[in-house]
Amino acid sequence: MLIGEYTHTIDIKNRISLPSKFRKEIGKKVVITRGLDNCLAIYPIKQWSSISEKIGQLPMGQSDTRCFSRFMFSSAVETDIDSLGRILIPDFLKNFASLGSKVVFAGVHDRIEVWNEKSWNEYRTRIEKQGDALAEKLGDIGII
Image (cartoon, rainbow, N blue to C red; front, side, top):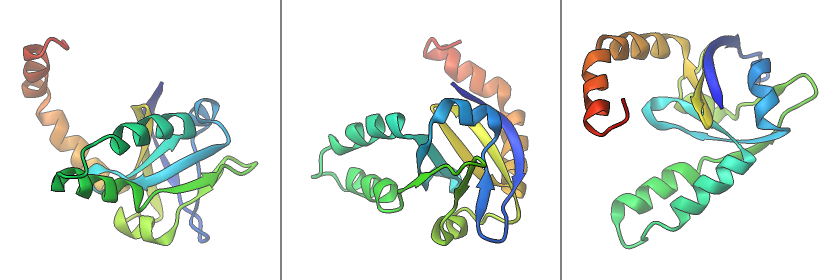
């Protein structure tokens, strides 16, 4: 399971070092794509295969499922993790997520999200204020 929050720096060649705790779980190759909420999502290959299979089974006749498929697949890039634990973030993904020199990695169960540091801090602050309301909603569906 991918959990935790880590701040790292992107070098001038758009390489970023994955947190060592994540490296142990994700293998030697990952898929990077656009994530929701203007972040990037990094998936281990096995998890990406599972997700892409599910998305691929969505009905093509529905506009929203076609849009979501395009959103996820058209920006997906398979990349190797180098011997120093780094991955290359393509320019178009870096621009999508407005990544500056400092980014935040957030472990979110089956994926790693990569956030612009300022955006992450604003998002986290907003969500922390909604903790009680979120817990009630999860309680209503039997999660908590």
